[in-house]
Amino acid sequence: MATKVLMVCLGNICRSPLAEGIMSSLVDSSKVYIDSAGTAGYHVGSLPDPRSIAVAQKNGLDITNQRCRKLRAVDFEHFDHIYVMDQSNYQDALALADTDAKRSKLELLLVAGGQEVTEVPDPYYGGDSGFDYVYGLVLDACHRIASDNDWL
Ligand code: 4NP
Image (cartoon, rainbow, N blue to C red):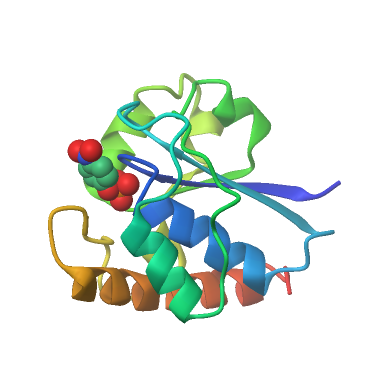
């Protein structure tokens, strides 16, 4: 059965849709199922932010199949790995996990991906360059996680 991976940020319109799209483009889809969600429900049902769509497109990825959804407690039962973008996401997600087994599924994406920077900054209120920076950070971490876990 495929390993199930969930990418999580606050809004599920900027960072985690990129993480979902990037990881999906790297792995063997028969080995890994990938989804994303947000800890907040501000944008449920929406497409990713146009700036995330644009940076993905610039790098050859189409993420317009994605729609925003909110993280739920049941995600800790369905998914094997839940990667969050920052400490605030970590704390919000942790509040939905009621056992050690569930809590152990939660990791900072960049820490799991062996990066020096530990948090993916929220690019929502910044300019386009923030989205390029996020793309690069997430890409490097996803490469590392995919090869470490033999998902390629
Ligand atoms: P994300 O960015 O967590 O990377 O999707 C955000 C998107 C929307 C909001 C905040 C962060 N918001 O406040 O609406």
